[in-house]
Image (cartoon, rainbow, N blue to C red; front, side):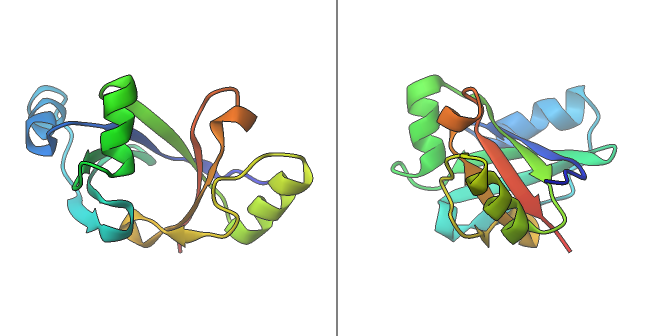
Length: 134
């Protein structure tokens, strides 16, 4: 499988506006934009850092995956996303190598990306996202 780069690092936050103050005012990062991804029950903010981004994730629903993550583990690092040139091929290759996938087929992700998650039980406890962007 070819990995092009770290696409982004996903950080689960309780309050997006409060969290943005730290990243913008303290770290000096610029907000590229925000987006609500209804399918994933999340509001996302993008903060470019070099060739990659920090993706802040706030749940839009108390039963959403980010809300559940924060309830279980607290706010903080939620996932690492790797950019791949062809997500369908990457999923196929990983499955052939015995990697357990949360997503057997790509789904819509923030920023127009096609995404798929690998199960943390197959990645030494890290929620790993594959991301394909055009």
